[in-house]
Each structure stands twice: as C-alpha cells, then as structure tokens.
Image (tube, rainbow, N blue to C red):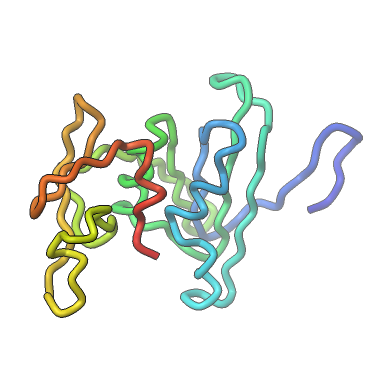
Length: 162
C-alpha cells in the first residue's frame, strides 16, 4: 500500500480477482474465515488478499472491504456469506472489467457447513454422507436434513468446514 495524503491509503487496482464490498465494519476477518482465504496460498500461490477495515461508506457509514487479487471467489461461497452479511456485494474483475454479483440465500447447502450435532450421520467418519442443510429463510435458520438440528445464520462462520 502506498500513502496518498494524510487521511487516505491507496490500495492498487486488481486486474483479475474479486472484491467483496459492503461488509459491516470490523467483520472482514469473518469473511476471510468463511471463504477460507487463509488457505489461498496452497490453492493459488500468486494470489494476494487485502482487507480494508472501518472505511467510510455512503450507504453504511463505515464498512469493510476484502480484495482478492488473482483468484475468483466461488458464487456458492458468496451465497453462504450472504447468510451472515446480507448487505455484501461481490465484484468480479476480469481484464480490468467489473461484473457485479448480488449473493442470494441458497435453498440448500451441501458439504460446506458442519452439523453441530456430534451424533449426526453427516459427522460419522465411516459414513460417506455429505452434510445437507435446508434454509429456513424467514426464520434465518439452517436445518440439517439428517437430524433436524437448527443453526442460526449468524452462527454459520462457527460451522464452516475448513
């Protein structure tokens, strides 16, 4: 980052990658956790991540931004992120051109969320069962398809498979 005046920092434009915008202030680390960006170095060695926290926003007052240079966030992962942060927007950058994606709450989530019920068949190591959750959108809950355990949208980051 290079300094631009006394009150602003300049983060370079990215030519290829993803910008996650309109994250509530001081929540960028949760986005990094849900998207498993800490493991990005193993998946994409030349990718880089910049988190901007508590920056001025016309819409939100203050917000966070996560910029991922050299890697595109999967739309299914962005949709899971929208459970926790409904205000986020995702901008995909390809060859300097921006296309916006508005994440939406999925009807079902398979394999990305771990059921908190230890006795659930989806947690049994010897069973080849993928976790499956239905979204109860109006109640802001996920319901395990196997054991009916409920997870609030706000606690999704605690149950994301890493």
